[in-house]
Image (tube, rainbow, N blue to C red; front, side):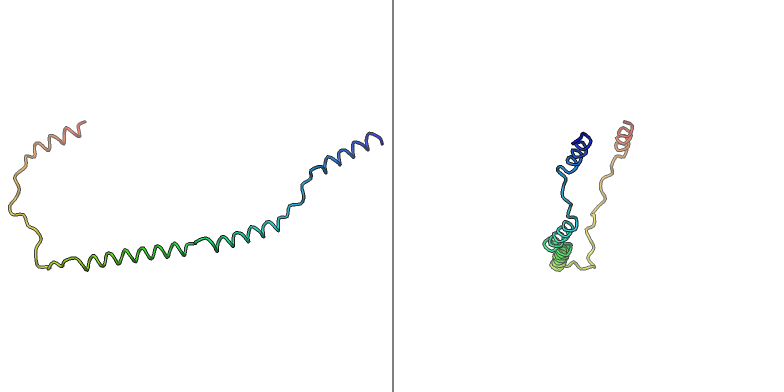
Length: 105
């Protein structure tokens, strides 16, 4: 065997050494799609979340309605609280001085 033939056979052996097998892409995608379908069926989706939100809103509305119905009724003709007499006159100069001092800082 001459050196050229030996070199070529070594190159061919090196090329084929640890050559990975063909990737089964179609089988992998089928397995991924099958798993995603199964996960979608198992996992609670937005339907469950929306159902809980609607239930919470209904309970809240029911609570507000019961609160309004159970509060004592006040006739519309009765006026609210009225001050008996005007308050004491406040010295506005002190407020102005404090404001100027504060804003001046």
